[in-house]
Length: 270
Image 1 (tube, rainbow, N blue to C red):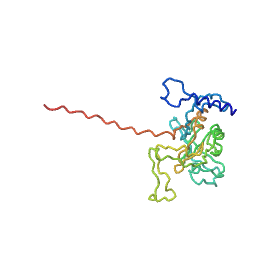
Image 2: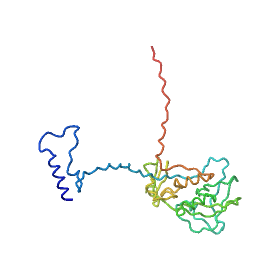
Image 3: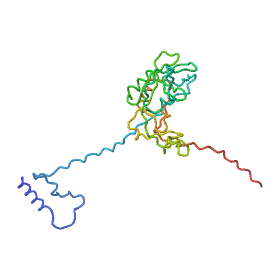
Image 4: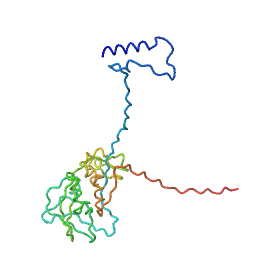
């Protein structure tokens, strides 16, 4: 093999001119040492591999789940109460604080006025989510680690219902993307709420800070019940009644400018 390589080098040395003008345009390219393999044969160049374009990571989408108040004759549910009168619930916000609820015994809800049962409702002043059995099965299957389902009796209804408790509180509100946020300050006289939100308009969350949660409430503003796109699609596929979804991961709508009436030009006096 070494002898073949030596002979190939001699041939190249004889063919290459020592002096003279540069290569003539259109003439074949002269063979270089790098073009010869170890066995003396000319190397064949492999076609360059095509580079695939970089993949863009698709951010998760989230939605604010709330009740559809547009349904005519929609029944209103009361705040949950304990069936055992000796038990009292700590607060109407007990089921919407973003934490697991300890044993509270049997619960009951009143309905006013009577109406068609819905699959999803927000009950009472605490806006407690109350769901039917088929809605509960969706959350139980898709987000078992993010929810707690508490059985509740609904007045004049035989079918089972559940209180849906989101057990995760995630700090992910995107202040810059929201239309407006107002924080509690030390001047408000509530030191335990400093940094929390007094009001949020046009809620937007940062999907990179949700840690893969499928159901959660937003830290500092637990009023909103947030669900993933997968749960939204599963609920819509099931054809549930009483729920509405508002996306909280897209840019907020720009406020519309009020149209001002054009001023009429006065006729010039002659």
